Every structure is written in C-alpha cells, then in structure tokens.
Image (cartoon, rainbow, N blue to C red; front, top):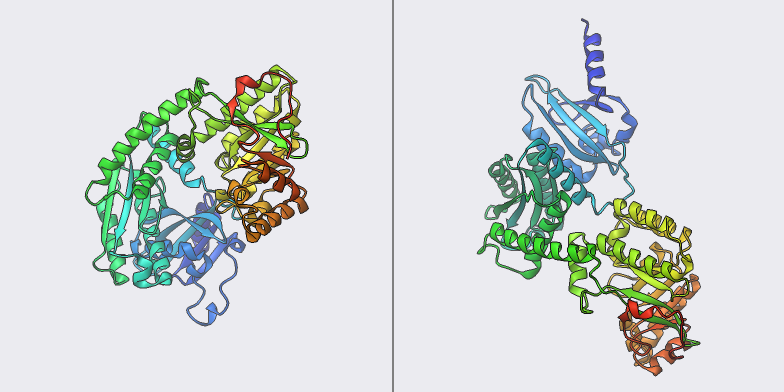
Length: 524
C-alpha cells in the first residue's frame, strides 16, 4: 500500500468520528490539516513570522492550558482524550496520538452538533453532572462528588497578579478535566475551589501532585492542595443529588465554617442529610398541595379598585416562606413550586369566571430550564380561562445568564395572551439592563425606592427617572410597599398606575377571594 493510500485510509478512519484532522510537531506547530478546517479559523496575525502556525493559536484562550496538558501527557503509540475544548466559542472534543517515537502528533477534532456558542447556559454543569451520574449508575460505576481546594495563604490574584492567576486557574481546570476524563464533569466554584463529579476510580492523588507541580511553576511552593470527597447518594434522583451537593458546598462557604478543622466529608454529608430532609418535606408539601396560597391586592391608584391579586406561597398556617423559597432556588425545587402555583391559579380562575384576576410569580431559574419550560408552556396551552386575568411576575431575573432562552419563554407566555411583569426593578443587579434584556408589559418598582421617595429631592428624582424610563418603553408601573396615603398620592403624581402594600391590604387566604365582587379599596 502506497503512502498516499495509507494516509487516505487513516483519514477515512479519523473522519468517521471527527470533523478535522490536524498534524503537529511536538511543539504544536501545524504541519498538515484536512477536513472542515474553516472551523479552525484563521491563524493569529503575525504568527507565521514567529513561532509558526500552531494549534494552540487556533483554539480559544481558555482551552489552551488543556492542550498544553495533553501535550505533556503524550506517549508514543497511545491515544489521549477526547476532552472538551472550545474554538470560537464552539465546543469540540479533542483527541491526540503520538504516532511513533518521533515528533509527529495527530489530533482529531469533533464539534458538538448542538453547540450554541452565543448562548451562556448556567444549567450546563448541573445537566452534565446529572447525566454523568445517571449513566454511571446504569453501568454500575461508583461515582464520587469532590471539592478541590487550593490554600495559598492569601488570594492567588493578590499573590501573583490577576493575569498570572487567570492562567493558573485555566491550568488547574485543564488538569481537572483530564484527570476525571470524558465521563466526569467539573466546575470552578470560586477562586479557591473546584467541584468535581467523577468515577471513584479516578486517581485524585495524582491530580493533587500535578496541580502542586503547577503551583510551584507559579512560585506558590507553599500552597496546599486538598481534595475532599463524598459518595454519590443513590437514593436521590441524579438531578437532586447534584443540586444537594452544590447546595451543601455553597452553604459551607457562606457559613464560614472551618473546613480545615471539620472535614468537608463530615460537613457535606451532614448538610446533604439536612438538605435531603428539607427537600423531602417541601416536595411533599407541594405535591400534596398542603400549601396555603395567599393573595395581596394590587390596585389602580386613580380609582382605588383592585386590578388583580398577587398570589403568594404560604406554608400551612399561613407561615411565610422566604427561607423556603431561597432553599427551593438553591436545590431546584423552585420548578415544582412555580408549576404548582400556576396550577392553583388556573384552577381558581377556571372554577368561576367572575373571580378576581391573579398574578403568579415565576423564577428566572425556571425560565432557563428547558424541560420545565416545555411542561409549563403545555400547561398554558390547555388553560380554559380568560388569559388576560392571569399575569406572570418574573422574579430573580437579574441572575439569569441565558437571556436568549429566558426571552424565548417570555415571548411564548405573551403570545398566549398573558401579561408579563418584571419584579423588583432597581433592586440589587436589576438595573437598566434588566429592562433592556426582558421586554415586559408591567414593571414593579422595588419597595426600597418607593419608601424613600419624597424624603429628599435626590430620592424623588431617582424614582421619577425609573418611572419615566418604564413609561417610555410602553410598560405600566407598580409601586410596592405603599403603607401610607401620602406615598400613594405621590406615586400617582409621578405617573405610577398601580400600587401594592399594607395601605391597600395585607395578604389574605386565596379561598377568601371566592366572592366574585371586586370592591373598591382606597384611591390615592
């Protein structure tokens, strides 16, 4: 067989599972490439005149440490990878072979067909980790959830500078990705910690040594690398096991517990046990519809008539659920809460067409969960109610990173005839971009601004500007936390259409709103 025939055969084999074949020398300089090479992009300007056209220069900056780690691990006659990298934001799987004792390295790249480079997917880790655990359980592979922690005595950015620290974090990420393999999943939690979901057989000691060597290269010889692990919890669904693990890890960090004194394993197992108990209790409460929804009036300031009621989640006995909602957000139970509250509102309105209109809260976390959104939109499609009487109020949207996915759901909600309200404009990160990113029919001004309005000229100017922006965008406004007639009058004079707060009425049990009459309360 001629050399050409051998190469053609090898190319056919490579492209059976790959899109691009690249050959490099041991320094990474490209000597040959074939296939869908346009996806590699153009070499960096000026590269040809210096070190030559290298594979490293063709992949994204954040993936370069992964390539370097692969290069260090190459052995003659052995395949390495595949491992995930990105090229121009598009995810691909990279594999390599050192063909002989020489310096010729063959690389194959297979792009993910469903990769969406322009989308940020905050649920990617949870989804990938859940899938990895599910597959491992089906195959009988024991899985472990670990936290890798680097203790350098101070913040690494401060010790070596932000630029070098960024490169160090990328190298650590590369080492983790290669150590846990294609079946594992990793995510950086913060500057010092990385969460790992992996097979129990992974050599964590080797990973610690490799990261220790990397730290020495950055002059952090005294830095300590720790890896603490907890076993998979087979009695939990994969999604819940991952969510409980992340919640336990985050709670440990937020509480400031001395994890160097109390082992992470003991802490995480205790927290996961508590998380498991709370999740079971809350899920049982939701599934059994033991919750006691309340409703608070939202009135037209000009007439004082109730326009609609905001539906609020309450536990048995009318107990507020602020802590439970935060817990539900953290563990993923918020999906079940949002769906249950929508069902309750739909049933309330369907049973009597003269009942007052309702507004249901939807979490930004729910909006970006595609499985939940599909189920939710199917529920909306089957509703037999006057859709104008059911509004959806979007909460926690300031933390949404996948704006495109959230807006796709919002648009479908509006297409079905339901108005959409944005909650807490002005609070925390919910600034001007909040209005830019999420088109809505109504905007609720955060109560902190409402309560301060009129106290100083500066406060009044600020809230007037917020109201004017919303009005210019064609959205009505709601002022929440109105507790006095003076505040109600001021809000109306500033152009606010609706008001909410104890001045107009406290939350009451939903069952008490079954009287079809909508009576006036108080006008501004």
